[in-house]
Image (cartoon, rainbow, N blue to C red; front, side, top):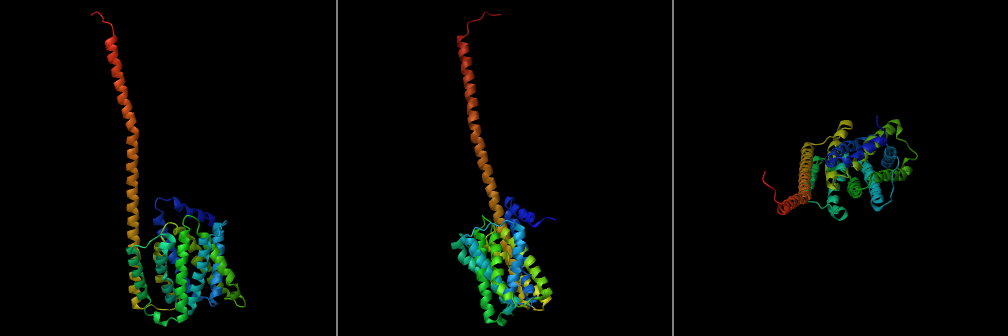
Length: 346
């Protein structure tokens, strides 16, 4: 079995693949599947939500440090800003899950594509096209349908906190994407460490019990540590909007796990909304992949054409030299004919 460090090195080999975008899309889907366990795990632990957030982040930080071993903290603006955004994302999401339904919390967190579309052009230079806005609108409509029956039940405070979590999630995606040429994983490690530190006061004086600690270990390893290892690898090869739209698989599955474990039932409109979201994400990803492959093909043809031109240019002097040699030989032959003395007939 590979160690964590060997796994990290294998993930970094994605940079050398012919199509890192396609592999990164698969990693992003796996990330969303693991993230979707958050609602049911948080609701299953009887503890203060900030204590839950701090405990699972502490465990996740250990997992990531074992994987990286030698993190490089540059303390740059994107790294520190991303760490602060991470603290807001995971802490506010845990609180929102305790104040309102898992469906409401995850829906409102996924308002983040709006913030990315609004801030992405200025922050990353990744301007949203009309197709992106269409996909965002469709995703939002689909998620609204998915949770239509639950929205009226949300507490005002839980709604505000969930929206704030969505804003932080959007900022986190932008900061991680800003570090696409570096190592965004250190931002997540730093964010987990900060979350654990600020949550220590909420852990004192109480305990979640042995079952609670087991669930916290599961969420720290498989719902935060491993998926963020995959996410920070994938984010280097896909746009911020790609990342957030693919991650909308999470809010579809999140309430499903809660339904199976706790009994929160989505309505009939939820099934329609889920189909709309999945269709929208799938179609947009397919169009992006086709466009990426076409662009790569055009680039390859252009390179081949340029190489052919270069070869012809290199061969031209050789051809010219051959003509010169023939002309020279003919000239020498003519001179010899003129200078040669007459010979008797045989």
